[in-house]
Amino acid sequence: MIAATVTYAAAATEALAQDGSTVLNGQIQLNDSVAETTLNVVDAAAVDAYASALGNEVLTSVVDTNGRLTSDQTMLGGARATVSLTLEGDTGPLKARADATGKSLGGTAERGSLDLDVRQTVGAPSVIARARIENDTARLLEGGELTATARGNVAALRATEGQVSGSIAQTSTAASIDAGALALTRYIPAAAMVSAQALGNAVQSGGTGASSAALDIRQVSDGALVTAAVSANAGNAWDLAGRARAAANQTILRNAGGSVVAATDQTSRSAVRAASLVTAYDFGRAEASATAAGNSAQVGNNDRYVEVDNSQFNGGVVSADAAFVGAWGYDAQVGAEAVGNNVIAYACAACEGTLVAANSQTNTAAVTSTATASVGGQGRAVVVGANAIGNRATFYVTGPSN
Image 1 (tube, rainbow, N blue to C red):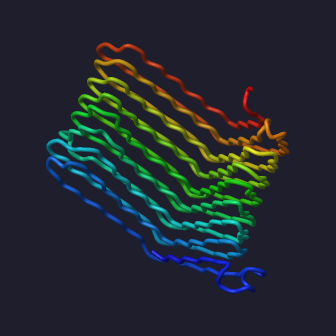
Image 2: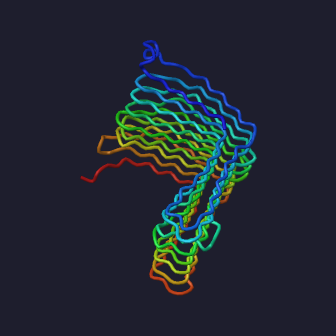
Image 3: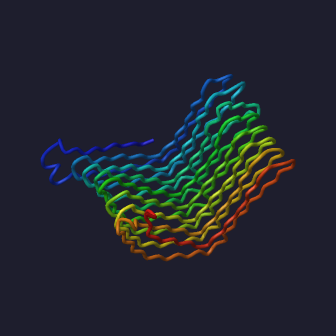
């Protein structure tokens, strides 16, 4: 892993506070990043297991001043993170996570401004995350979480009474972005969640107070496959959920104040698949959900102004499959949604909000979803639903009803 950390502070020099500073970052990862965690325990009071594989990382922070970051990150090696658990006897609360990421960039602006010129490229053979409970005799007496996350490129920004601006270009040609979570258990008398998320490219920005964001985001996913798969299994489960989410390109921009101005351009030719299987012979509540998207953009502000210029093209097959199989129990919920292109933009009506939007969406590939439920004995309620959408655009201005 290659990592860099940059911090700007007003106390450094007067010139820094007035003129700001510029940092040039270049990172190339040519070999694989591999992280493995294996745990074999009996009657553990609590289990906390984590594995993280990361190719390149840069972190930058602005406090009471201005700064500019020019960054170029390239990864040609693979990334693989694996958490393997054998849990014998009675186990307390579980928290286990496997996280594999090609490129990561983090930026914050606190009472200052951060200007960005960012390029992230993943050409790795694969980015893979696996989280597993491997023995079907596991007894999770206090439930818990088992999570696998695989991401090609990630940029995460945050402003507090500040501003983030500039351009972000992400390209993923990785053969596969693959997240998988498997839980084999006997008894779970508490809430438990098994989840997997796979993202080719991801940008997220948030702001609090009088903050603003002005970003130009370009995302291209040309790899063969982006997939997230979950298999959550129990002999007896009181509250068991299996959730899978996959997207080739994802952008989420949300502010609590100030303004948001965004140009989003997303192109995906990757096949995207999300699959969730939940099984329990005896069950109280069971949930299986799968969500897959070629391109997804969300731009919103709980204040007065939002402007978005969105362009999306999807040429890769998108599929979502969710299933539940049980025998005797109470409530089961199964949902699957697949969408080629999706955009949501909103502003706050109570703030006299203004929303300006331009949108272009093209989908040329098949979009499919399936949701199935099978209860062999007796159940109280089963809710099943599946949605398949080529292009979806939602724009609204909303506020408190009073």
